[in-house]
Amino acid sequence: ATGNKYDIYPIDEPTNLSALAKAAGISVEELKEYNPELIQTISPADRKTYYLKIPFKTAEIFAKNYASLTPEEKQPFVFHTVDKNETLEQIAQKYNISAMDLVDVNGLSGYKA
Image 1 (tube, rainbow, N blue to C red):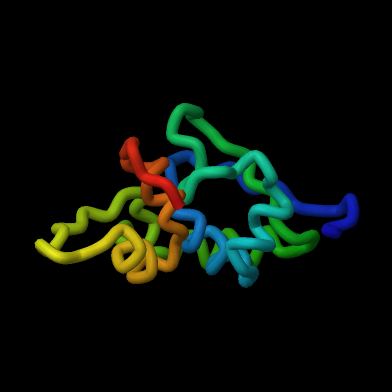
Image 2: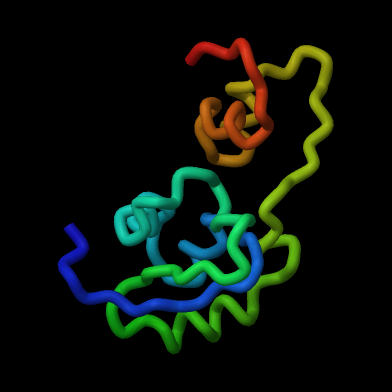
């Protein structure tokens, strides 16, 4: 789908995929097509540097956009206080992620989609 050409940009901190996609000017789905190993909602936290693949000839624009992201935008984790009657689906919708991602990221058990 993405062809063989892409640029690579080193990411030195765990960063929210939606912020990375925004910096690259593509959707999170497209970002995952370039980087199929990205299964969480953030770049890998267990690596010192993650080499992100982005569309060919976009590294310069990406670097500029990435530099202008706020720490809040890059933030890999969001602290959310759950309201008494709030469901996983409602929380997932609010952050534009799937309920299963929410379950995975938070290490929840016993949830069936």
